[in-house]
Image (tube, rainbow, N blue to C red; front, side):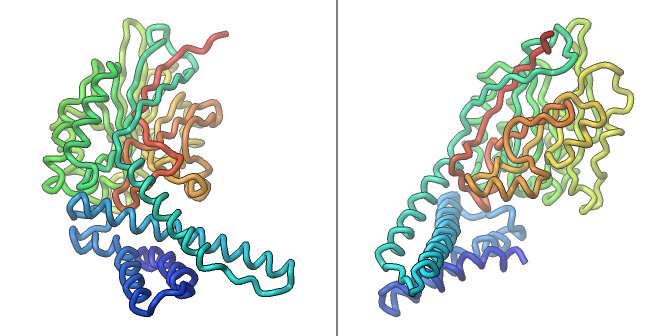
Length: 373
């Protein structure tokens, strides 16, 4: 089903863009072959590793595939828009309106250029995003407390060891009090990614580095990965919490499993279990990979939820579709029943669709502030 869905843009481009162009039969055939190969990028990924989520090609080839697949997807959208525009004009003027070959060529060039820009934006190290969040009943000792939020790193052949080292160095240079990672750290199993994740061992913060799984951890052996992260001095939160102290002030940091966990036989997310035994009246910061259960979190008294998963929608316009699949949440700050949800655009994104247009990645430093009267 996934491969069929990703083939649809190819069909649109073949039928509505390539075939009407005034090109030789040989040129059209060559173009059709290239489009067919690009459309099956995720099938080739499965052949390379056994999973569509972990392409094990050389990095340069992954970049090329993402550019070609992205250009084809954008071109399909542009061609459909062009067809709709031509249809509207034809209905108004009551005559057939041909689409000039020059115009078809122009949207092809634009799609290829935008795809190249999108891949460049996707694979570069994430810029710093500084935000302040007011937390109700935050103890005075935590006013100005700095948390670094990483998510959706998708460490892989695309986001490799050198990329990880750069992110770790940038993260450590920020001098945060606490580092939290809300899942989807990897694409691949431990043997495939051991060298690429090695730099994570060097993440440093006075109150530690805390991690929860995302849905991708469950694709590649959740238990093995969480144990491996623990060996890298990263502390997993498995439907559990910890208490962070500053003098007499306290802050509860809780984490839940991903909503997809039961599909692999793993324990489902359980916020009640995660908060069991937490001191009453202490603000709760919750790590939950996906944002879809934010309203439930708010009903349980969570003050701040940090999530990822959506990658911010990746492309302006596509973000509206992604929001609909995530209970209306896609990027940035939301107030949900008195709780603040911060939805990170992602430190990176899935190498199966590595494009960003108007939706940048982020290295997110959150400063907590007390609510003023």
